Image (cartoon, rainbow, N blue to C red; front, side, top):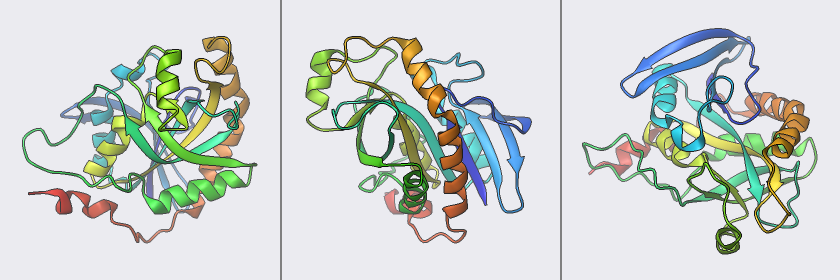
Length: 248
């Protein structure tokens, strides 16, 4: 299998061969590695050294580069803030849905009419593999992800509102998941809860958030490794025909 791994805050040191992809949406630097059964294409979402803010990530170029590499499954890894007191820092979270509050209108279909079905926003096979793998390392939470614009953190009032609809909040799941579906690639997400959202703790210092992720780094790598092994080789999902079904 050819699998894409898009890593967020804290996941940069991925060993392999550096390759560069040129797409109509921009250039992408990837790291390639292989095992007996799988080929892995890793993209650091925020660039080398975390130089790209959330709103500056070129999601279209990233997804197109993976499509051009004939990747069929993607695991997206990111940090989130918890809006529920029962979901603490250091927890693993696997979204089962999301609400897009971003202002980014990023799509591959500016010049044709395609209405992608997002009623089941994550590939059930990839998501199931992530959830099962994460469960080996303790309790794993699931629920709704609220995607915000960034790069600032949310206000207390915003979190108070968002918590009525979602469980965690982050800045990169949308439009990444949508673009993967638009390219017919199976996609699911693994989130690391790095902080409690605004109003649930006194402040949101970036260094403390980074420390949580550093503490969870090995677990995240292990979960991803195990999830890759659990993804079935033969597809039994509808992700690859989403465009065909959505075209008018």
